[in-house]
Amino acid sequence: MLLRTENDTQDFAYRLAKELQPNDVLTLEGQLGVGKTTFTKGLAKGLDVKRNISSPTFTIVKEYRGRLPLYHMDVYRLENSMEDIGFDDYFFGNGITVIEWASFVEDFLPKERLDITLCYTGNDNQREITLTPFGEHFEQVVKALS
Image 1 (cartoon, rainbow, N blue to C red):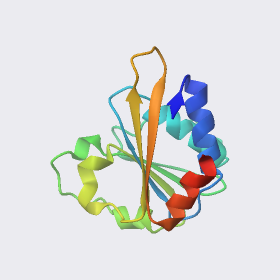
Image 2: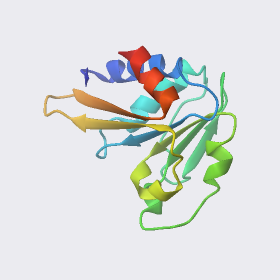
Image 3: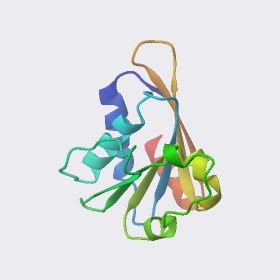
Image 4: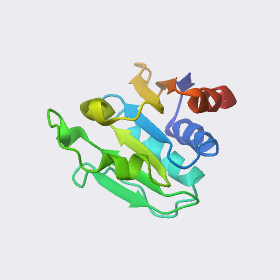
C-alpha cells in the first residue's frame, strides 16, 4: 500500500490503533528517516495519547498514557547485543508495544505480532507500507484495514 504524505502515514496508523488490543506488539522496520516515528505519532493519536511523541533513540523506551498505554521502543542502540531490557514486562503488559529496528532484538520478540515495514519509493514523501501478520488476531487486524 502506498502512503503519499506524512498525513497519510499518520492516518493509516490512527486507523490501525482502533483495531488494537492490550498486549499487541508491532514492529517497525525501515531506513533512517522513512517515517517510523511519524507512524508512531499517528498510532498515539488513535490511542488518545495527548503528549508529544518523539523518538526514544537515547532512552530506548518511552511510555505514554492513553486509552491503552503505548510503549515506544527504539532498539537501534541494542544492535549486536543480547541484553534483555525486560521486554516481557512490555510485551505481556496491558498496553501496545511499538518497536523500531525490531530485527536487532528478534530473539526476544513474541511469536504473535504485526511486522510493519516502511520503504522509500523514490517519489518525494511517498512511502510503501507492508504489513506481515503473525497470529490470527493480527490477520484479522490486517483484513479490517484492507
